[in-house]
Image 1 (cartoon, rainbow, N blue to C red):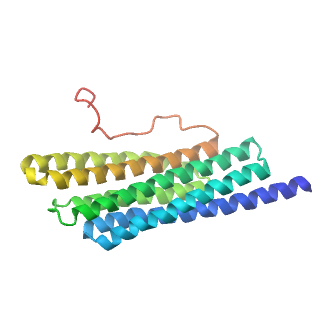
Image 2: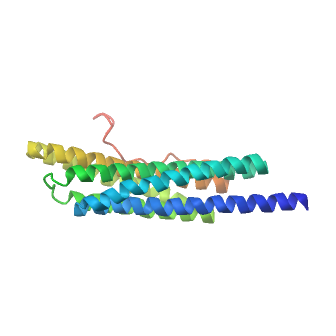
Image 3: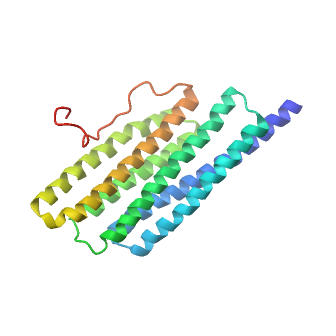
Length: 236
């Protein structure tokens, strides 16, 4: 009975922590799209809301860290349970980083409000952010449902995000070459695109964690990576 009681307490504690993960995930999803919408509409008030909202995301990460440490200390989980508990820390860490990237986008939005517009760039960045937000939603669903197949699908979709980034990178180079007055705006927009691309990488890391939880093994194939902007000409 004592062992059953401990197991039951462990399950309750873990369920509470995972509820925090889902709440954190919801806030991060909202931050991604809020940052993208504020950029497209040049809405400084919305951008400020995204920046302020990052405090709640950070606070949830701290809470998850504290409750996870307490769970390990009090419940002494077995090896398989410990793997599950530690996955919580990795997922929350990735969510926190995505929140930081959303905040960074919102910061640049306030800079771009009075800058010249680059045709179609804000809408393209919003579409890219929307794809990352969908990936994140699916990755979190896969985490809760322990769905390795859905997680693998998320991993594969990161290649599309990379391709969108590559296309925007080339467009920004073209705009800067055509008119030097575009350089400042394009540089900010490029950093925003890079932030979104990095968000995709962190979402992929969450999905890879799901595969590891379900199968006990890391994904065997190298993650699809289509970002070629950092390659040398010989590598492309």
